[in-house]
Image (cartoon, rainbow, N blue to C red; front, side, top):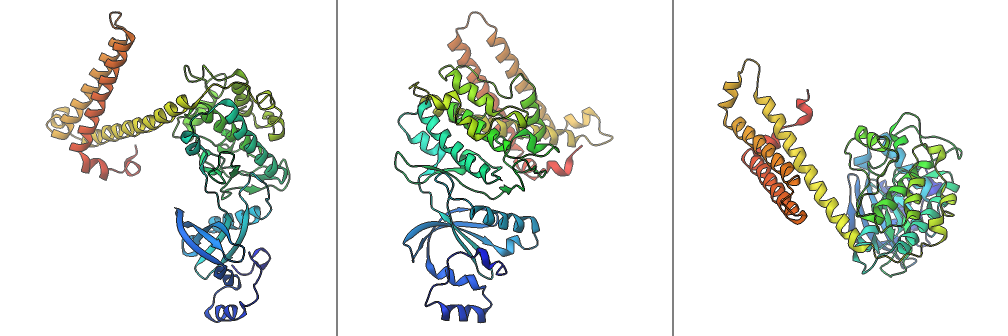
Length: 427
C-alpha cells in the first residue's frame, strides 16, 4: 500500500531511477524498487498467507529473513491487514539485543515483503535438547534475556501476546548466542501503560487466563506466558493439558495454585525456581510482578548456584509430552467412534436391530474390551503379590492392548470415521 511512504524500507538508491520509471509504468508501487537490493535464497517457513525466505541484502551484504505475504490472501480481510500494519509499526520502534531487529519493508502489486534480522541458531527447546548438559543456571540465563526483552517492549507500551518457546530464537549456533523474541504478528501498541485490550489472541497453553475473559488484558499477560515457559523449561512438559478454553480456565482455578509441581520431575528443582514460577502465574493480573521486579527475584539475583543437570529429565519430559499428545489423539478418535455408534441408532430402531449391525457389534466389542482392560489394570495396581516393576509392566501391556484395540477399530471403520464431521453432528 504505497500511500504509506513514511514507513517504506530502504531509501531509494542512485541508479534505480530507470527501474522506478518502469515500475511506475507497470503499475508497481514505488517501494518495489527496493526488491532489487535483495537476493533470495531458501524458504525457512510457510503459513496461511505466505512464506519466510532467507535473503541477502546486496547494499550491505547482510543476511536477513524476509516474510512474503500474498495480498490476494489478505484481500478482503480487514483484520489481517490491520494486524500487518500494526506489526510493521511496532517492529520499527523496537531496537534491543533480545528483540528480533526490523530491517525494512516494501511491496509489489501482489505481495508484501518484511525484512527482519535472520536468526539461524534454532528455536529455544531444540537447542536445549541438543546440549550435553542443562542446569538451573542455564535456565536463569535464558529467562533473564527474555525478561530484558519483555521489560523493553513494555517500556514502549507494547504487549507481545504470543510469547511461547517457538517464538524464542537463537541468533546463531554459538554456545553464547543471544536470544531474541520474534513474531510480533498479534502484538499490540497500548495508548497508555495501563490500557487494556479486549480482543482475545494467543496460543492456548501459554496464553494468560484474563485474555480469554471479557475483562480485558494488558502487559501482565506476557508475564504469565513467561511463567509457563519457565515451568516447561525446567521440566520438559507443559503445566496445562486442556484443549479448550473452559478446560484451561478450570485447570487454573481448581487448585490452590494454577500449576502443580509433580514428583519426581520437580524433586531436584530448587524452591526458589518454583516460587519464581508461582509469582509469574498469579491469577490476578494486577498482582503479577512486572518484568523489572522479576529481574530482581531471588532465583534470578542469586543465579541459582545449583548445578544439577536437568537435561535427562527434560528429554524424558519432552518424550512424555509427545506420547501424551498421541494419547489425546487416540482418545479423540475413540470419542469419534463412540459418536458414530450413537448415530447408527436412528429413531424407531430397537437395540436388537442395532446389534445386527456389524459395525455396531464391533464397536460394542471394542468398548467391552477397553472396559475389561481398565478393570484388569485397576486390579493389578491393588495386587499385593506383584512388585512395582511387575505392576508397571502389566499396566504397559494392558495399555498397548487398549491401543491395539482402538487402532483395529479405526482401521476397520476408517472411511466412516474420516468422513464423519463432528461439527455437523453435534447434539
